[in-house]
Each structure stands twice: as structure tokens, then as C-alpha cells.
Length: 351
Image 1 (tube, helix red, strand yellow):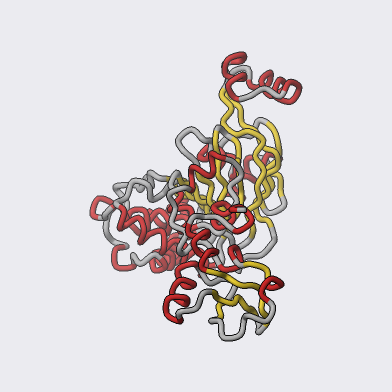
Image 2 (tube, rainbow, N blue to C red; image 1 turned 45 degrees about the vertical axis):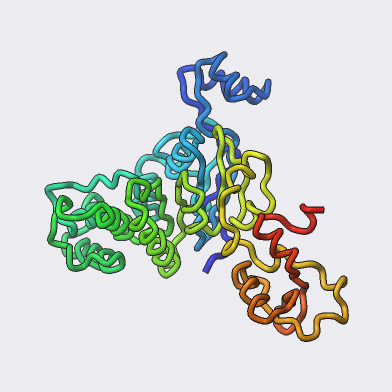
């Protein structure tokens, strides 16, 4: 169950690459220079620019953007694979930049698992040995680490493959081993950097669904990097959209589609189907306009999607649907509201 507790709190974080990065950071603070200015004047690259986000306990948080947007740089900052140039990253209430080498290893080993696009399995080791490798590095006895690895492999459906070698597995199965390896140490946080992008579409969708269900069942928190908005919508509870190192907008998929922050985001979401994305609470009109005319209307919950609302209207022949929760009427959705919703709009935006 998702809560409001933040396991990761990223506060105004910058990452600038280059020999003159310190000068570039001062110039950004003093002169408000752009990414292009920094490249031209200091020969430095701004990978992440003033990024702030929170990842809540039990949440799958997707960070998406095109190549070069800074998303992979940002996820590497979250477990200090690279050092931030400026700002703070708090993980479980601790500033990871302040951890010494031993404390950082312990944080990564016990609290943060990571799965990359290239799962990098050891070819000479069995599936079980690969899944147990993280605990082996920590010095956990063989029997204990094998039990944990077997449990993780069972969770990803690979119990029957534990004695096989990576070369005998399909690409999707290898990604499952990578996920099992991350789960073996039972971390609270899982970082996923485009783990499914190289897979065939059908296998990719299957793994997306399996990953989301498994993460929710185990009560994990996850940061998932992707360049694919459909994938972010399918997996994420919330999404951050990045461009040129900047987080342009953060919100649920529905919030981003209904209220894009700028034209860049609007263009990004233009081709997304709204049928299963936008809910009744986003397109309904206030009840005050419809007092006394709701009798006989079909009812729906605030979370009913547009596809369900269309089904209600077509099956009942009604011109509208009443939205209610706990027996209390909240609003009305008309055919016009549905058509606007299919376009990703609301009455307020269309006016």
C-alpha cells in the first residue's frame, strides 16, 4: 500500500560533467545560464538540472524522457553511482553524499536493488548462483544465500531453471534473473534502468505487468526509467517527464494527459489513448448544474474510466451518467464530457 512517506527525497540536484564543472555550477547559480550556455562557455555538460522529486513507500515512480534527457544520469545519482554536483539526495532519511564507503555499501546492499538494461549475468554461473551473487559479495554463507535466491527465483517464475546457465535462457528470462538478483537481498527500493527496452513487444508487456504486480505484492518502492510513455503509463503510479536534464512535469498519467505543463508535454501525450486512462472524476461537471435531473441516470464511481462510461451510456440509452461515491452524488458526465475526455480535455480547458 502506497503511503506519503518518502523513501527517496531528491532536493534541487544538479549533475554537471566536465573539468570546469565547479565554475559552471557557480555560473548557473549567479547568472542563471542555460545548458547550452554552459556547454559553450565552459565545455561542460549539464546532465541533471535542479531536479527535485520524492518517491513514496510502496510507489512505482517512472522517470521518462528521450535520449539525452538526463533520466539515466538521475537514477545513478539516487544510489550514488555518480556524485551530485549540487543538491541533496536523502534515502530513508539519510543524505547519501554524507555516507562513507562502508556505509554506502551497506545502504546499497540492504536497501537498494538495481536492474540495468544489460542484465550482465555471469555466463559461467547457474541461474541460482547469479541470483545469489549479491549476497555472495556480502559474505553471506552459501546455504543462506541459496535459500534467499531460490525464494526470489520462485517469485519471478524461474524455480525450474535454477540449474541452467544464462545462455540457455531467453532475453525475457534473463531479465527475470536480474530482477531475482535484485530481490534476493530483500531491498525496500528497486531501481530499474530501461530493463525491458531491448525485448520484443509481447514479452515486454508481459514483463511490465509482472513487474508491477510483483512490486505491489511485495510492498516494494521502485524507480523505473523508460523512454516509452506507454510503458510509463502501464507501470507507474506517478511519472516525471524530463527534457534537457530538467524535470518538466510530475504527476499521475491522468494528470499529465489532462493538464500538460507545456507544449512539449502536450506533444508527448498527443497519441496516447484516453479510454482507460482518464477517469470520471476528471471529466464530470459539478452537480449544482444538474439538481433535480439525476433521477434514473446510470451510476458510476469517480474512478470509472471513459471506456466504462461509454459502455454505460450505450447500454442504457442515457445521455449522461451520475458519479457517486458512498451513496453521495458528486457530479454528472455527459456525452460531450466523454468526447472531450477522449481528446484529453475537460470542459474547463475546452471553454
